Amino acid sequence: VATRNTALTCLAAAISIWLIPSWFGRRSQRLALQKRNEYERALPEMLSVIVLAVQAGATFDTAFEAYVTRFTSALAQQSKAAYELYISQVVSRNDALDGLAREVDSELFYHFVATVKRALYLGSPLGIALENQLRDIREYREEKIKEEIAKKPVQILLPLGVFILPGMLILLLGPILMEVMQGIRMRKVINNILGGIMKSIKYYRAEMQNLI
Image (tube, rainbow, N blue to C red; front, side, top):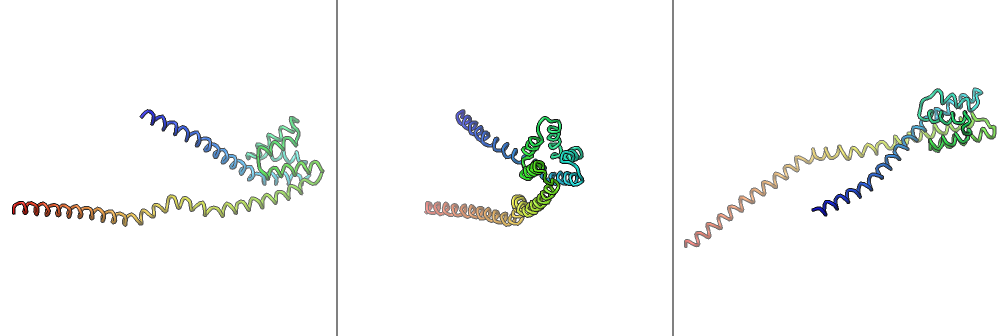
């Protein structure tokens, strides 16, 4: 018994060692994806503010400051930390933007940072470049929303198949199964009665033959 308990304990420990890291890994991936999606949803808002400010004659730093001081999204908070780093000359602007891009970890944001750095370095119109990127991001978000809507029927089928259909099958097939089970029980009862009668007949036959 002790050996069997030890084996079961070792098996449970091995399963736990295999399952727990896998569960935490999936959870961390899910949280990272949710965080990235939250940043990407706020990105058009950031670009809109910066584009409007730059087109009105503001510099990128002034436009960036207007965004980080007037908005409270997760992206705005991360951007504010990056802005304070380079405005206080702790790091360069490019390094701060690169660090922000790594934190956001989105291809859309990497493209935004690359566009800003290139425009500032070359002296090209930043407003036009960001306006074009803003249009591309909105189109990308629209396509993503359409894809998510298209996946909804498939996602609905899963709970339908797991929770609703079994209940419907039980309601439909339950009475039939009850009748079948009752029929099986009745046949068993009848067979037992007939078996008892046949045994009794054989017994009386044997007794009569003994008497003769």
